[in-house]
Amino acid sequence: MKTTKILLTLGLAGFMSIVSFGQNIAGSAHDFSGDNWNNTGEICVVCHTPHNAATMQEAPLWNHEVTTTVFTLYTNATSPSFDATASQPDGSSKLCLSCHDGTVAMDNFGGRTNGADLLTGNKNLGTDLSNDHPVSFVYDAALATTDGGLFDPTSTNSGLGGTINSDLLLANKLQCSSCHDVHNGSGLNDLLVVSNTASALCLTCHNK
Image (cartoon, rainbow, N blue to C red; front, side, top):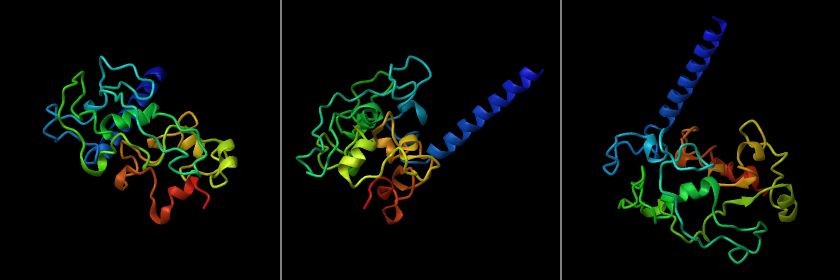
C-alpha cells in the first residue's frame, strides 16, 4: 500500500510537470502546432519523439535533422577582447542552429530531409556567426581571470537560485540555452531565461 501511494505521488508529480511544460510552450514562439508545414498538429514532435529517436546526448529523444554546417565564428579577429577559445557550435547550440542557421528546414523532422520551410528574417542567423554572441566556449574561473570583464561563474549568483555555472552553463560551456529557454519557462519575450531589463541578463556574466 505504501509503495502504491509513492508511485501514485510520483506519477502525479510527473503529470503536473508535463502540464506545466505544455502551458509554457503552448502559444510561444516554439509552438508550431498551428503551422501549415506541421501536419501533425502537435507541439513537441518537431523536436522530440517518444519512439525511434536520434541518438543525441544533448537533448532527450531528438527528432529533428541536425545541421552539418561549418560556421564562421566570433573570434579574436572579430573582437580582440574575446579571450575564450572559439570552436564550432556543439551540444544544444548545434540543435538550435538546426533551424536557426537557415540551412535545415523546420519541417525536417521525423526522418524527413526534403522540407522546404526555412526560417527567414531575424530568426535566421545564417552560417556567419561572427556578428552574434559566441557560443560553445568554456566559461570558467580561468577565463574570467584572463578576461577581466567577466564574473567568476563558479561563485557568482545567476539570479535563478544558484551560480552561473550551475544554472546557465552546460558542461562548463556557454550555449544558446544559457540565455534562451526553448520551452519558454519564464514566459518572457525572446524566450529569455530572465529579463534583460536594464541589461540585467547581460550583466549577470559581464562585469561592466
